[in-house]
Structures are given as C-alpha cells and as structure tokens.
Amino acid sequence: MQKKVDLSTCQGHLVEVVLERVDERAPWSLAVRVRESAGSDWSDNLWVDDQRAYFTCYDALAACKAQAHRVIDDRLRIGTG
Image (cartoon, rainbow, N blue to C red; front, top):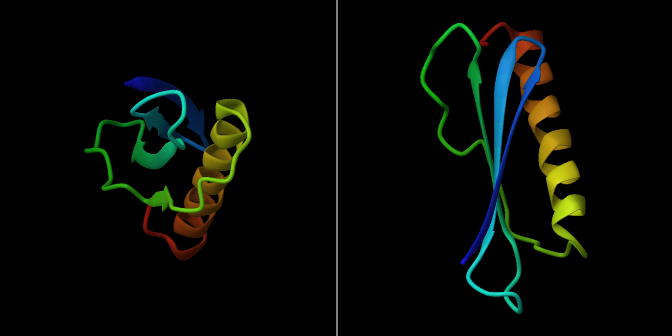
C-alpha cells in the first residue's frame, strides 16, 4: 500500500488530501476533506475522484487541491463554511 497525505490551508480552512493505491500498478484513489481551522470536525469526503487518469501523484495532488479550493469558495459564497 502506498499512501500520501497532504495538509494545507485555504481561506481559513484546513485541507486534507489523501492519495493511495494498493500497489505500484494500481491507479491512485483520491479523496479531499476540509475543516475550519478554528477546530471543527473534518468533513466527509467532499470529493472522491473516480476517473483516476493522472500520470503522477503530483498531478493528482494538484487536482485535489484545486477541487478543495472550489469547494471552499462555494461554501464561502453561500455562507456555509
């Protein structure tokens, strides 16, 4: 099992990206969760990518972070986060 976890911040939220695969021939499984930095619970997986068409884990990480930014922007725009 290979697993990479990235924690970052975006507009006052913590972003967790999890990339994992069972072996080096398997595709990456991608998931994104966010929470407010103030100490709320982590969200359920906000986005799980089922395309799995990324060439490297770095491409997958960039896609997950971009999706997290879109989710946070939407939450802030409608006032739910």
